[in-house]
Amino acid sequence: MDGYLRSLIDMAEAAHDERMIKSALKSFANSSGFERFAYLQTEGAAICTFNSYPDDWQDIYLGSQYSRIDPVVTEAKRRMEVFSWTADDWKARGTSELKRFRDQAIEHGIRSGVTIPVEGSFGSTMMLTFASSEKKVEISKLQDPQKAMRAVLTIHYRLKIIAAATIVAPKRLLSPREAMCLMWAAKGKNAPETAVLTGINPRTVQHYLDSARRKLEAATVPQLVAIAKDHGLV
Image 1 (cartoon, rainbow, N blue to C red):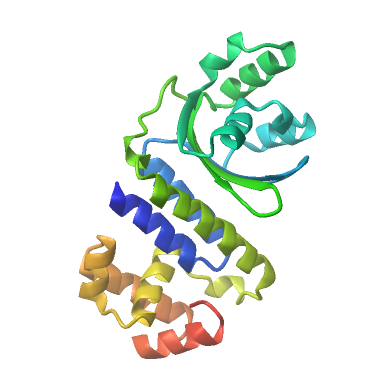
Image 2 (cartoon, one colour; image 1 turned 60 degrees about the horizontal axis):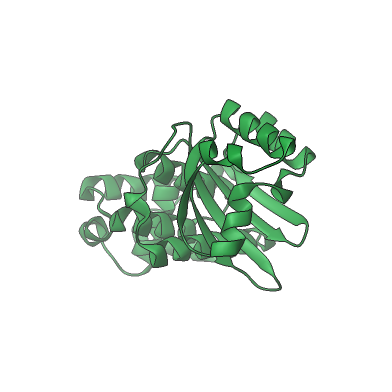
């Protein structure tokens, strides 16, 4: 699992738009047996979310201000450590509003999951959740809490940088793995070395670099790195 989390951290660090972070999170979720992910930041009553949940569930959640009663959010703020959860445990906890929340979550394919909370600045909390429609999930792939929290912090700060940055034209955007291989190239690693570091086949690494060269109109990898630096991509 160490390799999966490391790859998620690397791809998030290399991302230069939200699409790339979403792609990295989706890849990690699928490889770990989950169907959805959600990044949530809370500060007082205000929330900011970044997720792959169904659009109608996002509308319901935000419109009903469910973050007030969401047992996952409450538990994350209380525990500040990686934990698993299942919606089937919520039914004995109280109000009809909570029961409605639980039933709607299950209806939209959110029944169990694992959440990684991290305490932020000025009373804020960041949390990354991976969710499944199954009754119970296997969390062995997220049992390195330090790396899991590093992933949350990397995503948090990368989103802040992206929000403040000017990005190149959409047609020149790189895929998450292209960007990750480019980052290693910028650090002086050749394709075989990058393959060892990322667990990707050397020929596939070269394929990603060649694709990135075409997108940024570079003749060589050193030129690719130089162009990427000029555009703030590395």
